[in-house]
Amino acid sequence: MALELKQSLKMSQQLVMTPQLQQAIKLLQLNHMELADLVSQEMVENPILEEIIEDRADPLAPKVDNQQTENTADLNAEGSKEQEIDWEKYLDTYSTSPRTGAEVRRDVDDLPTYDQTLTRSTTLSEHLMWQLHMAESNEQVRKAAAAVIGNLDDDGFLRVSLEEIADEELLPVDDVEEGMLLVQTLDPLGVGARSLAECLLIQARLVFPEDRIVLTILKHHVAELEKRDFKRIARACGVSLQRILDAIRSIAELEPRPGREYVTEDARYITPDIYVVKSADGHVIQLNEDGVPKLRVSDYYRKVLTGAVKGDKEYIQEKLRSAQWLIRSIYQRQRTIYKVVESIIKQQSEFFEHGLARLKPMILRDVAEDIGMHESTVSRVTTNKYVHTPHGTFELKFFFNSGIQRGSGDDVASEMVKQRIKGIVDQENQRKPLSDQAIVKFLAEENIVIARRTVAKYRDMLNIPSSSQRKRMF
Figure 1: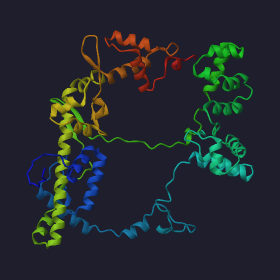
Figure 2: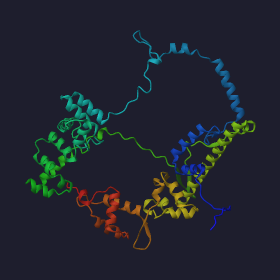
Figure 3: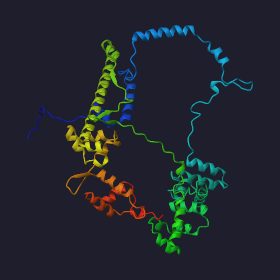
Figure 4: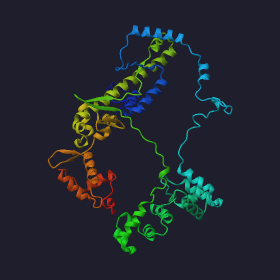
């Protein structure tokens, strides 16, 4: 069979991820603060872009006649000429604080700068190292103690084995252990412990040195204490249950996280991307555009483009296309977000009217089919974006949750079931907490059919302990 070369035409369609398309997808995923930063950066890099400055008059301010304004300005100008003040003479005559011979006038350059007035809180490591420098010990143990301090977590616990520290610092294990014991004598009490039981025991030896029951519980009965099996502890210690409860009250006064005071967490503020405001006609959607400059193409560069040389013209044309695409992408982003939120309000109207108890099950496909877009687009729009509603601020992902079927046949949102479980636990008798099966019965009375293991799963997601761990004896 002879081989033969032929030319043929073939038409096909395929999606090409152009840089412009990648930029549009990226803009869709950004939240409000990230979009503001990106627009500001683009304005620096692209000279074609410029911000639209809008002079917005205060609608509450009274209207002023232009002729009256000009006359008032002329009168003020004449009055200012007649009443000129010698400010230097005024300040010398009417000084509020008379100078004394002992005062020395300081020059502005002698004052501390702004960065010299800044301060920050002391960290746990700095606090411990300050004490270590004043502790009486040899150089080898001091070096081992510094290594132990460097391996403490934010709560003040040592989560690394002594052997690992010894291998890393090339020190004997005995010296590292002695350094750990030195750290455990420093303030705050309990720092340098390897477990919660050891942390509480270090504190109890100094706070309750003569309470034998407290020390015995922390040495030998921590497992029973975690399970709240107080009767077994009482039988093992040979004392009454009331005596064990008194000892547990003392243990409860100890600090389980000795490094808590030195942990400084910066507050995390959420800026909503969308505001949903209730009005007489329904709910109004307002996109948050504060801090995001409104862009337009500079007229100056449009005029320069006509008379520019070849190299300059190519550069301006490239930047012009980039600016136009960015403006179009931002507009498309805002329009898409508006359509998604509008669809959410339409399908979750009862939530916006009555609150969390009326939240309905909803998936991405419901919104995607309603607005005629792909589910991946809806997923990008709802990621890391927040909406302010009459019932609080929520992430857009919050409105998408699975459904649980009621006995009557209709579905209820899983998020609403979680909040109902939390409400039941908050109202329970802490001396007789409800088991998961008891919570199932409570929900069944409200026509919510749910399995016990599902209640346990939701309880874990809400960080609610089990009934035995929630039990309060005093």
